[in-house]
Image (cartoon, rainbow, N blue to C red; front, side):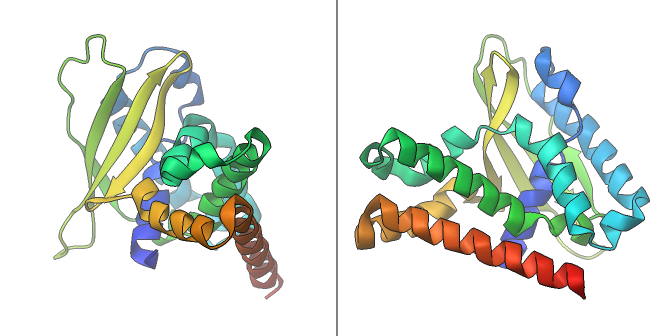
Length: 214
């Protein structure tokens, strides 16, 4: 995955991160994105430790304020495609856990990289009884650069609206990973994919520790 796409994906998740109480009640998805985008960016701009790249603080923010609002089980299932059915229940849970960790570790630096950007949200029409929708937004970059379209695929659940995919400039997060996952499963089955994810996450943790020690 290209770094530019990776960074924007976490930026997308960050815009949904600071409205934990709101998710338990019926809040329009577009209004939620619009409100929380401003809140998250304001916090990042004011927090010098996050701006300096404090890995622990960034990860704590992601864990506490962002991840509860994403359906990682559905995201992993979509990324696995037909191979999801080949995994035993315990393997499926391992895949969800490792995929979740991979996304957090890979994209956390975007919090500081894109703190000066703004976002505009396209209002949704009447949702009615719809249980699935797409919130379309645009990330406004530096002057002279084209806005980046960013869409959130969201599902209405008993716990409120949950994100199960993010599409940046026409590229779906789950689709982007599907070819990689399929390749790993073809080479060595589900266990091969799990091992690859575990190894990748260990390497990312090691890199974070090296960066913190500098």
